[in-house]
Length: 467
Ligand code: MG
Image (cartoon, rainbow, N blue to C red):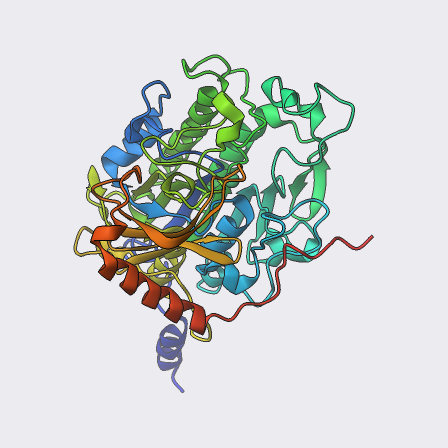
């Protein structure tokens, strides 16, 4: 075989690599960056209406990108919400939820099951370099860590920053959160699978996470990459570095959000400096709503009802921004429905791949929304609390079967479900059930069909750590 023919055949097999294309940076699938805050409320950003928290970088991201005003997470607490984002599936499908333990703890023995195809695994299969930075909370035992779930590297605290409380240190009970010190929580900071610092110095953690993301972007600018930057904050206990302490009129919570915002600015700048901004989609959102029992140390859901832990809107609707210069229309605002599970599906499609066909994936492809060319394929939202469907959204309607505050024992099982028109009544104040029996009927049918098809594996959150 002549050498030239062989070379041509090789090219067919390998595809056109960067060496052959005129502009290698636009000839490859887009980079994906997800910045995921922890317990940040719908009302906590300048561009989502907060009066005293200044977020110039996120505001800029919104001005150059798209704000989603009806964007949801897969659960109202950390572990199941993160599982939903990284698997594109409702947490009940992966076993990453429970009615007994709401999240994983340092004494948990479970974690994200191997059979799940994480977003990192799906993108890695498409040739992406992958990094997880920050809070993991999908299992801290070696086999569950990011580097065993598709990420090339990991730098972060493997669970919540209020875990591993050191007994006898600092004020008792809740008071410890009002004047937090790093040494009150013995949380580990890990690099890949090794603990490199314990307790993790939380005063510099946000800054170090953002810097790690920038470093990874600079090192991988020549190939497609995926950065999952999941901040531990503004989950309590709140910590900010000296540079940010006292900078916000909102107090310590504002300082923390402003430091996260600063890091977002550094990431956008790094993408621009590397000349890859137009080939990178950056998402910003949060894992669940504000932790209201913590008063001013918790955030605000703005006009939405309740917060973290509940299936009211404040628990699961998040302030979400997508930025992709040249592709997402600048300064756009969409009221189309979206979910973190859709970030999974959209990212896999953008990478030229497809979601696993051997299981139900709940995410939909949001490309029509992002390009401003069409409506969202998402028409419904299921609001799970643990293993139960507490509510469902269909179009503008939300039907509640069970209501309960995040952290108060006030559960009500509604014989006649509550019905709210979320576009007329985003604060869920005016129940219109008696005027809309057809909505109740359609929702019941939808939920029954969903539950019939559901395959529910055992809960990972109920597995104890073996001594
Ligand atoms: Mg959280």
